[in-house]
Length: 520
Image (cartoon, rainbow, N blue to C red):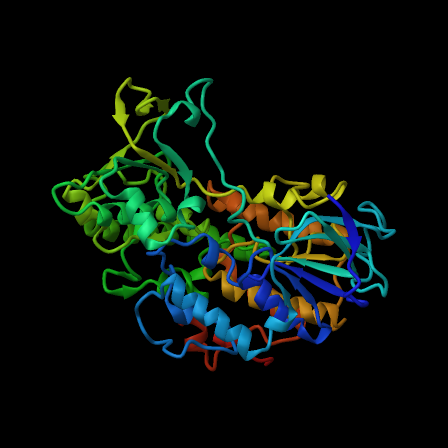
């Protein structure tokens, strides 16, 4: 593999890695710096382009998933947009703000290398200059279908390659009991997402399919399998379910809009947040029965609406833990009606492995299969670490097992670099855009970062709150204190944290991207 210096880059200051939702948001807010956006594929959209099935839809209403200055043309439409509609929306956004000229497609970043003088342990009282006037990072980019690697130099990097896609997570199996002995076809959901409708139908139709996993990708895949196997010749799809999470059929609970329970100031007042006062902590403790009652109230509706007990799919943990870890999913329409017809079946083993004709369970039973699809997620940590050089690779999850990101954007121990899309919330698009605005203000020196120790202390507090809130805290989700998080970002930028027109709306209406369109 040859290494060359790219002669077409003249004194660039900022590079953005990835042209998904976070990368587009960063490109828009940092456009006055003329950043270069490196995108490994030939199109924008990230996971919406490369990790979506034919049936994949948005998990929230479109009015909750839009840029603050670019609303959906039909934002009041209550249906969930398909992944194709979302891609159209993102293309329209990129066109409206002339972002395509900033993007270099088919340019895969394979390594980033720090060439500055600062060390991670230097001067913990001061983070240093974000735009020092000279390059401190070198980026190795491999063009599509080329063996050459081009090196580019930058003052600042914005990492937007995301936690999903590229690196599939595959379970481990005992020796001689893995996919290699199975005589059928084994693939991951990322491989399935690359198939067009005709190829996907051909893969599933008339086949005995096993789907491993019960998160959104697995549920959608099982539905597509059931739809491909209509008629007397159709075969059932079996889902291997290890960890069960709560699913909701829609965003109404006993006739009340879902946002009332978790997405208003009054509802989030019931939940612990970082940096709360002693009095606030005591009040939060006293109100904890109400918080648990709300979770039980929602669970009662879901158990009434969905046949979770019938199929052994009732989670053992409270609903609020799934919401607090951004794991709540929308159940596709007709999912359980297909299960009632026998087209979707469920197995809940503690352990399982392959045999030549299918899969075998720890109780000794066997299930014949033609196709096994792993809907087991992605290894985002491995994906990110693969391009980072030492010592920063070792610092990605220091001092905890979660990457510490101040304001969900800055790693206190990695200089001249920002991360967007690595902290999840109710609306990842909204979070990415607001964090991009915050980053733009920071690079424009409209405020300064606190010292490294202070930033680490703040990230530690957030992680501790997540640990006390949900057993699934490693997803790094801020959903139950997202409004407080946005308040802190607003204060940093010099904005008024209260964005509504009156106290009633401030307390009981949902916050959306529209509330953060302009400085107030």
